[in-house]
Amino acid sequence: MGTKLKDIMSGREIKPSELSGKTIAIDAFNWIFQFLTTIRMADGSYLTDKEGRITTHLNGLFYRSINLLSNKINPVFVFDGPAPKFKKKTLEERKTLKEEAIALSKSASTPEEKAMYLRRAARIDDYIVESSKELLNLMGISTIQAPAEGEAQAAKLSEDSLVYAAASQDYDTFLFGAKRVVRNLNVTNRRKVLRKGISSAVMPEVFETSECLNKLGISREGLILIALFSGTDYNKGVDGVGPKKALQLVKKKDKASLLSSYDFGSDYDINDIFGYFLHPNVLKLDSLPQQKKLDTGGLLDFLCEKHGFEKDRVLQSIEKLDIKQGSLFDYG
Image (cartoon, rainbow, N blue to C red; front, side):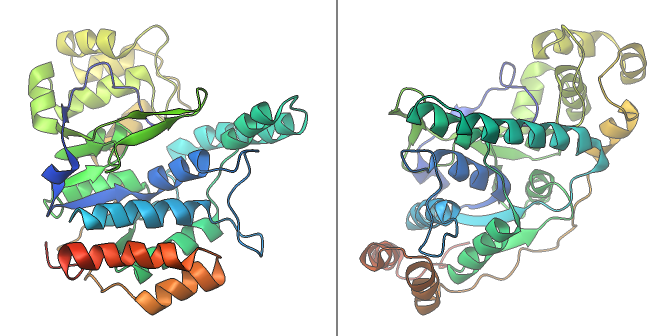
């Protein structure tokens, strides 16, 4: 879910072609959760293979990654490790909400209502993580296992200029130090509006962190303070203080007086949470993992033989890459 900074952060809409030749660090859990929520059968159930294994996430990852690669966008997927202790209460609350959603789906009065509750119950388990990594490896796409938050690791890759940008829908990526963030990285430019059952055009946005901070007249530390006031995955926030009001406070008072004067809604020392955003648990890498070539045979076996994907469609997608760029990784 992340923090709520939409009202004060502004990016620039771009065409996917502007990212051609760029390497993008992708918050894998962020994407996978989107797929698990949106790619469903009419009754709200997941796509599955003949063995009953979920394939919703594989469908989303394969076809969206194909679209990125065919536009010469080079993705590197970063996976979450164990969450920091500050996130314990948030995870417990999410678990409770998912359990409630499952219970409500069983007593739903209409198929649409049932589907709505089932989407709310989406969760990422070990099978989904491991099968996602296996698919990406067969596609020749690099993956990185973060020691903690995936978006923090993606931000670190951006901060160290190992990638052009970090891609995530969560604004926490800015707090963790990303130089540049891409939102809405979907080259088909369409997002389904669930309740209305229609799709609307959504263009990717690029946010230059330094430009955003200069426009607001604050530092990264100030942005972290604003997030703590508004609420993050690690704290509830201060009642009655949203991003705009927090911005005014941050410009008037220093960090020490602000952190000592308000109840930020956490069982932990708010100074420790501030420090974690500033110095998260991440890997320090000198370079990205070496890229591999797409394994056509292995990919067909994994998707079609093991998980029941339509072979002709998978082959057409792979051929689209060859037609457009000759080989997958002729670019940096």
